[in-house]
Length: 476
Image (tube, rainbow, N blue to C red; front, top):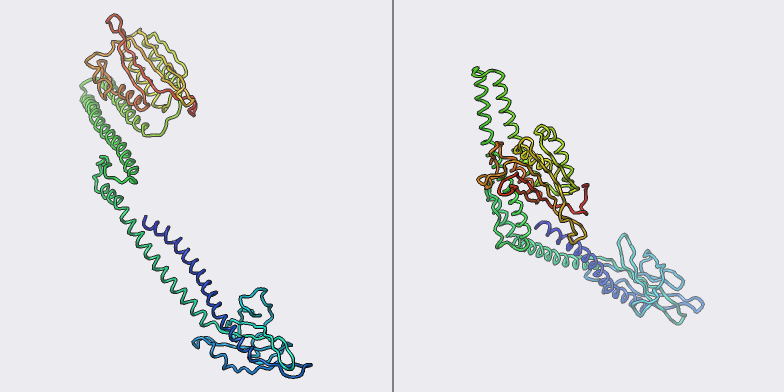
């Protein structure tokens, strides 16, 4: 932040100072030229006052009696040199330095001085010079005319003064830049103290410390950042807790079937039971352990899906029909009176989660439903009406009713918890998976005994999920 602020401030300011210094140098040179051009004009006028006309009226001749020493009074601090040239009425050289380049320009229409004078830059004897040209009227007994007087001055003193102005300005501007840099550095250092303190606090935490950062005392500018960190840590804490629970439950639940499997293999090696019976027992144990592992992996996958983005829009009725078709052989084998009633019911959910939900609930119903009993599955869309934004929504209800013994009151309190098996056996993970899936989809799961005259006739598993609005994207 300090580096970016310094660059962001000092670079534009430095460019501005550079442009200002260049402009100031040009202005200083113009001001110095204006001041010293007066000296050149005064020199030219001095020479003009010493001119005379001799000869005859038919052939007047300009005469100059000005010695070069007369110009020494106008030389500044002996650091500049002056040269002059006087040209006659017909353009002939009269006096001065005959190799000084002749003037071929024109007088300005509106000059700064009350004289016929022009100023320009040229090169004389390999050095840059500033030249003043004065058109001086000269009259005498032999006639009158206009003489051309050129006075040139080298630029040492002018350039020296301009450089002094530039250097003095640059020193002051450099001091200003240094002050700005020090102030920015100090202000940023002071303003970022909370950031550094927060960084030290986070760095000092243990690897497994995901407690939220206390919000009191946090500057308003850092509050959104701290809130986002706390939210991320909250999700991380959930993931860590889920991971720890998964590892604990896995190690606990798989220990028993693995121990049984080891005992069965040892028994088979000793010949305690016939080989065919031993293989059947080992196969049953492996099947049970495989089913348990698959259910535990399914429970872990629910948490992974929960961390993903918005799920797609799917039709729960179509999913239930697919699962029912897969389980049709089991339904037929149990000779159940099966009824399936569905209507389009769009929900937001992952395809795997919806299939797993329907499959577990139907498996539970098949396990508890007596042979020849009744099993009814219905998917309906209830309460579909405008939600205020032009879209329509409602509640999708999945109801699976069996004719089993229902849920005893002693088991209802812990039903749905992992490994809380019912009286008919099982791992106890099926309902736990269903509850996790329903919770991840923002719905509810209810298990209600169906009674008539105080007699339990079966169990209704009712899942209610938010319906996907009609304006949602994605296929239903």
